[in-house]
Amino acid sequence: MKVQETSLAGVLLLTSTIYRDSRGAFQETWNQREMAEAGLPPNWVQDNFSISKKNVLRGIHYQVIQPQGKLVRVVYGAALDVAVDLRRNSPNFGHHVAVELTAENGQMLWIPEGFGHAFLALTDTVGFAYKVTEYYSPAGERTILWNDPELAIPWPVSAAAIIVSDKDGQGEALRQAEVFA
Image 1 (cartoon, rainbow, N blue to C red):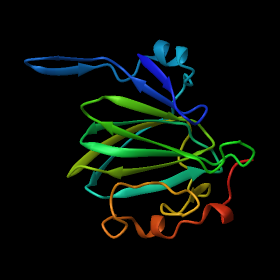
Image 2: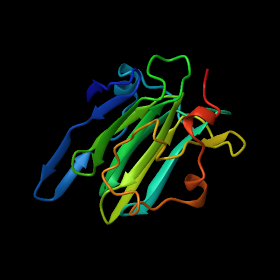
Image 3: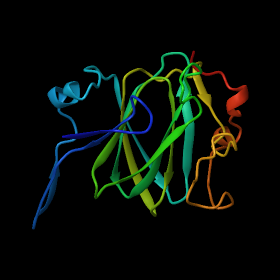
Image 4: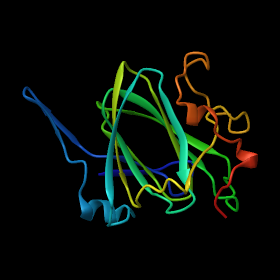
């Protein structure tokens, strides 16, 4: 497993070997020993999977009650995955990192507690899998507006083409949002 630091301390890009041959491919997506060596938590409470069509943007989501660490990957298709530092006392508060995750590159992104998360589907369909360290808390869920100018996330699709849920379209601006200390 190759582990790379990103520009945001704590957010890691993980690349495991994909073994390909004439039959297809094999990839180990979870190995507790290797993940522990990379600094990831040993316990996970839930695995999630979503399917999105092209130009669907999900996020920027986080929980202030029962904050979640997330290990995310694309099972099929391609997505631009974004983590935003929402720790008010961090020198990187409001900064983001964006990584293209694909089924072909097999990369995973570790997003620790204290960060918001979003992704944009870049292909016709995207299968997106993530492990989380804490259960979903409807009372604790918050959403930052995906196109907040203060964040200046360079989404590679025009704003008119992006598809968001009603909830995500009504997210709060970073300046008004409840975030982490």
